[in-house]
Image 1 (cartoon, rainbow, N blue to C red):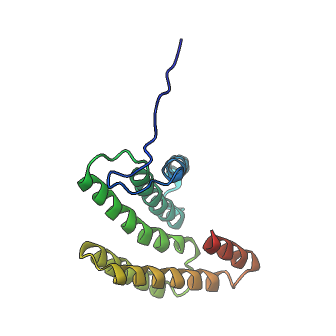
Image 2: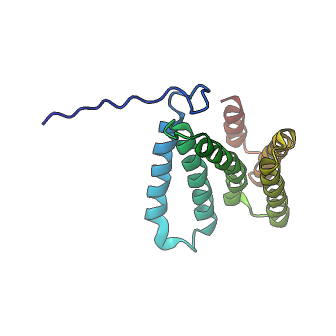
Length: 167
């Protein structure tokens, strides 16, 4: 049998902007890996609730990114809808990153992140780009501070966070 693999990955979004080379593919594989983990752990959903919420949040984030950055969306409206979900997913991703670490100051964690999420989504829906970016930055700084506080500023966490920011 001969197989013909003539798939030509687009190099531009429908808007004409350049498309990142591997981001969509990498995020697609990460999404399937997260889904695989969720399927394995589904019997222990309530026992592992913080982890499961984290995994579902990351699945939404990487899934939205994989769809947007695949380059396969062939309408302007579809592209902008996907872009909206991808930006919302960033707020959700930052929010869920702290959930496995939430041991103390839980009301502060959930309260502030909920406010960041609501203001961020509102800024997206009403196209307030400066506000959206500022809320993103505040939420990101809060997540770094909160998780750092929860892990007692562990050296490994500090190194990992620095490398994440540099990447």
